[in-house]
Image (cartoon, rainbow, N blue to C red; front, top):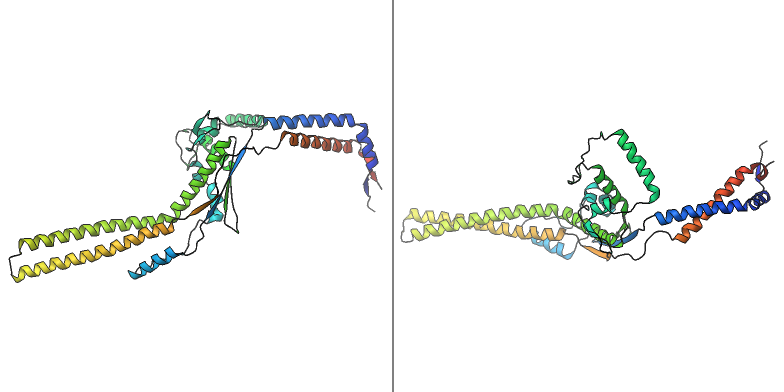
Length: 353
């Protein structure tokens, strides 16, 4: 037969009453520790930006370009979205090393105007650290020095190579990654970017920079093939034009030189030059039409983003208020002391039947 364990609430309340002084002391100690943590934690500010990307649907411009392409015997395949990077992958893209490193040279300025520098230098040398984290960092640095740096990592911080970062660069990139949060609403596809920083103006600046860089990356990715095709058509167009101009000049020169001759040989030669010029002209005009289609394709592939909520310098910090921290700390102190009393008076509190 198993024994049942019951808690004698009356005995517990009596123990709390008899030790209320020590309980008050414990709550006071926890409250002091909580306030020390609250005052020692740097204030942080958060800026939110919301974007609404265009939907991958066919529009009138796409239809018009496709119709124009079909007239010259081309299949431009407009309106079919085969993107490998879709909105759900944007958070992973922002957390990539290449993207985080691209934020290093962004120029930032504190709200009071006392500091203007790049974001890497600001995070590395001008941010405050909570006092309760310094012992752990000091111990970690001491252990690292005792082990020695045998990782073979580069030590020159003046150059940034995303493939091989220095320890400082890696730490700064990791810190940037923790300060940026990106989420995508699956129903509306609205992208929300949040950047947390110790200075409100820098927080807003970086939120706008992340938004701008994300838009540029997506635009560059989606238009890369179209831009390559456009560059190729521009080279073909330049070559076709040069060949046509050369054929036209040869025909004109031959005609002017032999305009008084009626020999069949010269007439046949003139016809050959004229036919060659006409072929060059036909090729020139066809490539010109394809060049215009390629320009339209670049425009069609360029995505449009609607800024639902732009970056704005936050006014209030996101830290918990000192009063709420004090109340929570004292409550935790009371709970801790009650648990201590339960363990100390376990014979009186717990009844085994």
